[in-house]
Image (cartoon, rainbow, N blue to C red):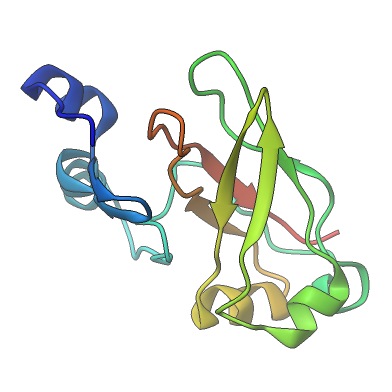
Length: 142
């Protein structure tokens, strides 16, 4: 396990205790303290700063291909099918890939409900195994 300095903890905003178990320390506090309005939560943390939009039809069309926020000079793309949104399985994990590493994206039951009501959501990806960085991600309906 990599030990982080205080500077790295603040820059990354979390510490991974073991593979898949991370604490969203400083970033989680900052985002919840600075947010205006309710957070949609998420399996991997509080809402990102994206712009979820109402409209479209997720139950018929799924989501368009969405691009994550830029972190460490790269992005990832992901799209959810209508079948994924209809199934609304909070245990489902969707994987995005890029430049030799992956990120997990897992939605909560509440986030599936929002997509089923054609409301976009803003979340964070899970941390990369390589160095623990995360990306913001907004999913809207197609």
